[in-house]
View 1 (cartoon, rainbow, N blue to C red):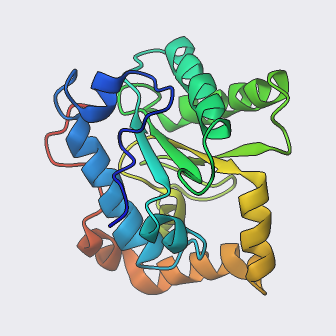
View 2: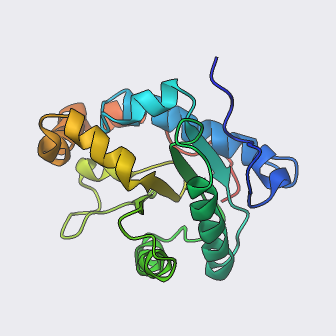
Length: 209
């Protein structure tokens, strides 16, 4: 069986935070994020590349206890370097979940500019990239109520750290990668709001965000 990547012998933000010992609810955050990955991302085939890393246990789940943007940036920097320091056969990608900061989508969207600054500052452009997911994710020029936004809606605000090399290999192996975005939009529209709600991939009821 694959090892649980919620706790690994590499530099971490806070071992107690990752294991859920320091802040009540962090194990629930990880469980909800894994449920979303399995039922929505993989279950609906929104990302054809996710299944392999999941099955091999190569996805690292990290819960940040940051309450402000500065702390989250520090966590992001540490996790970017931790990912680089770990062989992709052990950890190919990292989900940095931050339930207690940037819960307003507009704030989250603005923060992504700082994420790009971090990548440039650490000379990581072309080496790593960061994808974004949020409970209220709304694509530019999209109506917030458009079900297609759910392709990028996760239980909690999440930064997805990816290796460019791994992404390039995955795209090369997928003959029609350019069609993924449009296909995902159609998948959600076919599913409909009731179908999405039936997946039960939101934050746990009563979770303190």
